[in-house]
Length: 339
Image 1 (cartoon, rainbow, N blue to C red):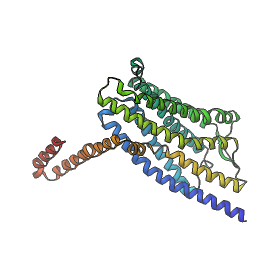
Image 2: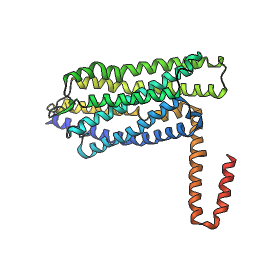
Image 3: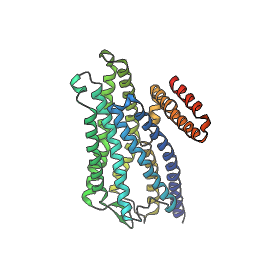
Image 4: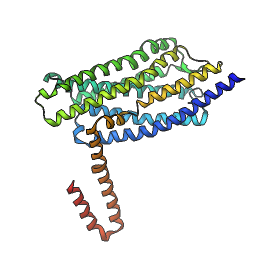
């Protein structure tokens, strides 16, 4: 009886932990990714920058992922679990969506580091090798690959009464164990991102010797530092959950063993919450470690978004109070001219 009560208590704690961390992650994730999108799309400095393009795609993916993850949190509130053991369609769809978002985010980080290495290289032919048009092609092709791959792997999931939603085909179990989790979503993006971020950092340290405009040098240094911190966070946050998934795929815990199942659920909840920080942390890393990025955020929020909002409000007020139309319009023009 005491063992049953303990397992029930662990399951309850795991459920509550998932709910609270899910809500907190969603709040910070939506705010951070929206601000990232505003900065990297509103400033002309970033519009033609390839690394900013990859970061923008990553932020869009992370933003959509927040709504996918909060839906899981709501299901936990309603059913006590993520409901993957209740519906076969949701069992497959949950992993298809999750893997698509994860692969896209992981490899956009890789593309960012590789591109920054080429952008900061002292050889002119290597710097000219990567273009924004080529980057768009690579991003489109990889997103298509991530979707097709996730559909193929996600379709192999099935529901079993004792294990819940798990991979049913032995071939896909072997594939997940020896390639997908350890290589494709594990060591391969980690090695690529780590290696090229360090090479880009090495290039930037010698960038003063090259004849480049000051603005370009500052931008290269800023993005390289931001990317390096992003890679460090990515490696630390994603690795534990990947290791756990390799174990869970090969040794699924049966619900007929309440204590082992409860402990497994708790470990999964903790590691998943750590993994999900990877989809949230972008903006906060950038603003902490880059003083230039902080100024850019302030510029976008104060001199762009706020001024547009203020102008829109004044425009509405002018329609309501036509007598004050000319005066309000002149005041707005003066404030914009001062910027």
